[in-house]
Length: 185
Image 1: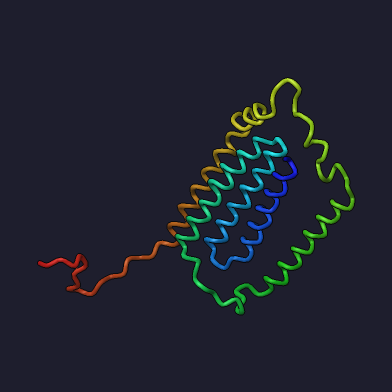
Image 2: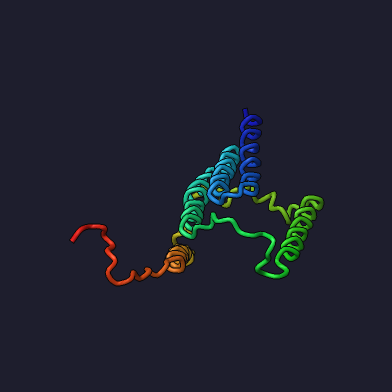
């Protein structure tokens, strides 16, 4: 059964990832991203990482992708753009270079097989023998790191408000005598 769950989830993740790249419509790409994130959440459940699965669904699929969809629809980026003109000169070669460097880093980690580079040991061991991991993470998050947690929430709120303000168009003034309500006097 574990193999079947893994294969179905992996297929959902791969198909969704290809959809994110292949779909030309940004809304369809964002919905493919939701499918990918849900597939990853199922993989976390299969690995018995329930907290990560819940965070994956609530934070990423729930909040971040909804924010993406909100901004996509607000900005109206579903218009067709000319891909032949490059607004930032040198952007594509730089992107290819960064992609190749990232691929080289992944290959170094995979071929090297170093436990220190992958964190393999830390995945299977508990943080403490007496207190569950979820309790320890919650205690740290809402005591020592509560300021960073709240600042992150404020930053996301400011980003949404900034997007709304930047995309707001000034009202067009109508010539004198135009009736805007369509009613009769």
